[in-house]
Image (cartoon, rainbow, N blue to C red; front, side, top):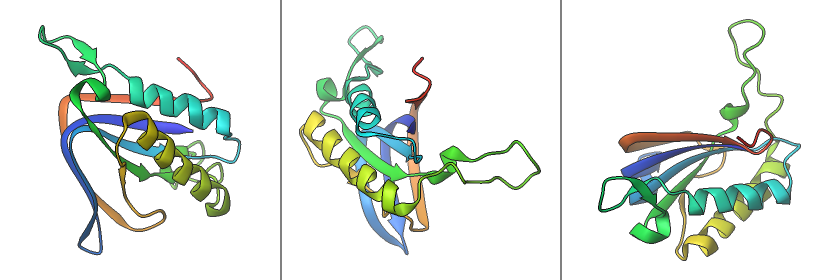
Length: 150
C-alpha cells in the first residue's frame, strides 16, 4: 500500500458536483492498493496514519497527532499511486489492485482508521471521477509505502 498524507486545514471530495466527503483540520489521505497488499500492511499503515505526529504544539513543533487535535481524515482511493513510468510516456497501472481486491481493503482501511481516531472517516467514491479540493497546511506531505518502511 502507498499513502500520500497531506496535513490540511480543509479538504473535500465531489463526485458529479455533490460533496461525498468533507473535513477541517486533519489529513487528506490518498491511498493506493496493489495485489500484494495484506491485512498486515493495512493494519501497520492505519496505525502510522492515526498516530503520526505532524501537528504543531504550543512551541510550534510537530509533536501532536490527530487525536491530540481532534483531527479528521478524508480517505481517497488512488490507484495511480502505483503508476509505472519506466517505459514510454503513458503510465501503466498493472501493479494497482483490481476492484475485487482493492475495494474490500479500502473499506477495511476506512473502518480501521475510524476506530483508531474515534470518529467517522470521510471518503470519496471508489472508482469515481472525483474532484478533490484542499488547503494544504504547512505544506506537510508525507509518503508512506508499506513495502519500503523508511
